[in-house]
Amino acid sequence: MAKLILIPTPIGNLEDITLRSIRMLRECDFLLAEDTRVTKKLLSHLNITKQVFSFHTHNEHKILDQVIAKITEVNQVGLVSDAGTPGISDPGFLLIRSCILKGIQIECLPGPTSVIPALVVSGFPTDRFVFEGFLPHKKGRKSRIQEICLEKRTSVIFESPHRVQKLLQQLKENINPFRQIAIIREISKLYEEVWRGNIEDLIKMSEKKELKGEIVVVISAE
Image 1 (tube, one colour):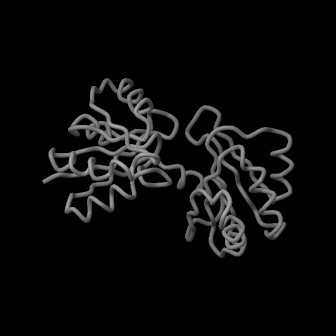
Image 2: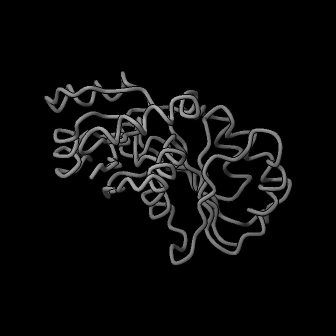
């Protein structure tokens, strides 16, 4: 029976990949990758030779049926993102849903994700939390931020470095000024860094130093 295997890849340090993920990368008939160049670089590091096909946000709607057909012709296919677990703020949802509807077995391997390390290192309560992913750039952004500012659970947000200051300014308009926030960047990489403080503290920090790399923002419960 055909199977789609979701294979998490390192979000920073290449040593984060699991032995099981390495084995699956070797055993899959072929791989579907967000960026084939990134995946081939990882495969080269692991001394794995494998056929890799492109499957990303810009083509997933167009080639979905074609990909499903390819999967049904083989034993098992691996889906990888550039970093972390496929389907978490990455392409994959449409393919996973379609495979389920077609009766194709899905297997998701545990592995790297930036959500849990950011949540834990923030020092905020972890018993209840909500993952917001990337916020809308325009439509619906204001209302989502207002909801987050009233949230009774710890909130985890993905943000690009060039929009962090905008996010902080928008939070300032709605959030309790004493509420604690953590900004974690470059998780599992050489320059991993954590900023903690209230909204004013973080705005001052962001004005003094430009944030670069992958960013996760964690907001304490109201």
